[in-house]
Length: 211
Image (cartoon, rainbow, N blue to C red; front, side, top):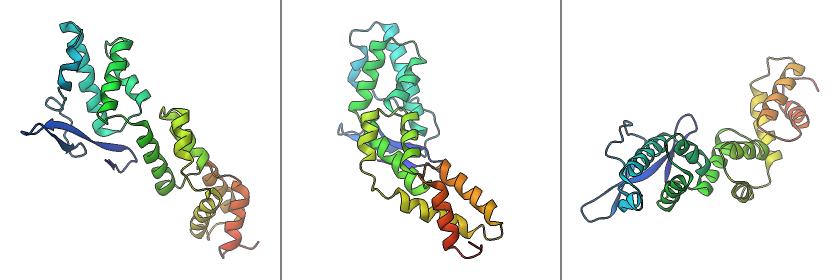
């Protein structure tokens, strides 16, 4: 479960505290003030197994840093590894922390891919190509990204035309060639195919310019 922030980032809901019954109680991270001194899970002392005091402390500090980052933005496993790499952890410790966070649902590349697709389609009007680039930039593994993109309906062309119609309606005061250039640029930035043809069709359908 997660909340979408105003800037498109994803603020996850992370189970942080055990109640008196020993069950996890769920705490929304969106309204938190960022002070995570009491927010780190104990992890059932897993981090201390086989580690000396110094290593255990470094791992705990790294876990705190990662939890703090997750409060403001959901991360891919690759991004989480980058956060941990900033701390004094070796590769085995990083793998252990990632595995622990994944097991508790703090990290989920498949879920993150679905949410990024939802934002790209519904909020940004992006096409499949632009969304695929976003998934890659966020470190989503290729197989996971491709599986998530397969869930998209094959309606890029129709969504592109609907977007262009909406934008064209607000450009009636412009010369046709100026409006065409702007529409093509907007469509291209969102990864829509055949941007020129779609822009021309939208201008033809929206009254205000000679063909």
